[in-house]
Image 1 (cartoon, rainbow, N blue to C red):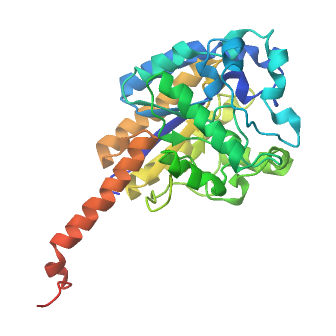
Image 2: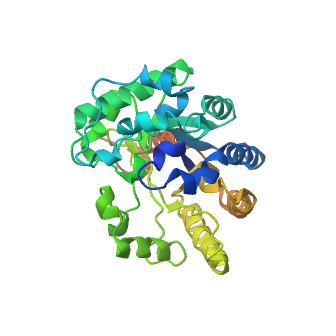
Length: 343
């Protein structure tokens, strides 16, 4: 590529994203804080001219449970472990504060902000690697994601798989349905896509935590391969929320991220940072302050190396155009390289 790329993506999911992992009474403050966090994020993105992708769960486009129930596919995933299914929890969710489930106004706010891409985080926070679901279930989930987005005047071009459950078998479906890019996982064994049961492995979780502070798995910066059905814009680093328990390690965490960014800028590769708005739902000021350190460093790399801020779809387009420019240059200068055909 002609320039390094700094890509930001956010998994916008509200309670649908943590139904099976966080009790509402313990996590409600994070969820209710999402609105304020998004307003702060859009403001700082505007000030630093950051282009970002917001992958939204389709359910949050609706106003309430009644409207959602009237707009679900007939063919829904039947996970072997029904605990993973958001559909199975509809009755209980009738009594839950709708602010932790729905946010159509925030979708509109993000969509109307400059350089912010609305992407799919699937319709139902769909798990692509759990037993019991299949390609037909995924296809219908994707159709309904596109359908609700269209009602908001949006065309989905990118997708982020919930819980990083990237499934190669579904890439052909993405291509057929006009989804041009997805966020793949960092290339290392501890980041390999897996089901929820294996993801809770204690050793794996410990290594992931350590890798946030110390480089044990590499820089995770990438060339973007545009030759595939749907283009992979791989993740490089999950932006963990500021930790009061590990506050003494925050400078080390920031240094780890900056080293990755600098390497991408110098080598003209992609660095992809991601997190969830609910990660910033509490301690918002502290998290925004940490993020601002990252964005200030991006501006420095932009000045020194020409690094670009691009959302996922823009990253795909930039990589595609870079390849086309190289081909045009090659064709134009064949005679200089001694490759022109005779006759």
